[in-house]
Amino acid sequence: MASTPATNTAAPGASFKPFFQRISQGDDRHADVLACCAMLCNKSLADIFKQAEALGLPKVGPYWLYADGDFIARLLAAHGLVATVWKEAKSYNDLSEVSLALVSYDESYEVGRAVIYHRNTSADGKTAQPYVVDPYPHTDSKLHVRMGTAALAELPPSWYIGVTQMNKTAGK
Image (cartoon, rainbow, N blue to C red; front, side, top):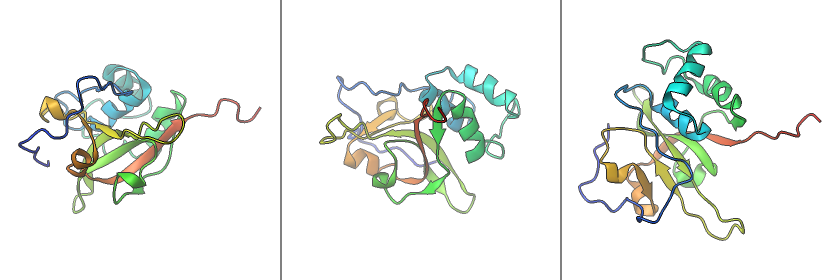
């Protein structure tokens, strides 16, 4: 795991309220993707675990063998969300407005840590307030939500899945 910086330049101001409320992955070191799905779906981690187990996820981790891009897409689709395939990223500029991103990526093992990225673009498209919500429980609590260019640079993405609302009128 990447170490956290000694200074807290990454924490948002006290008035900032992220759209996606943080859900910790708890003591399960393999549940970061499921915690991110819970944040995206506005459900509890327990509810997402139940749904994931109904889709074939084992009751005990590691889950990464099962929780691939197709599995994540099925899990999110049940909550009206559409997920892209995994895409490589060089920076947060590559990511979709809302994404599940892999950070602290180790290429030799092909594993990373999942976080939620939200660009939070204004309705007029003129301003954006990008931030990351990190479910990892051992990160300094001041870094559970990071925003700003410098803060995001400390946690660069390697891969991501873009997430959008499902078009409810499709097929009509």
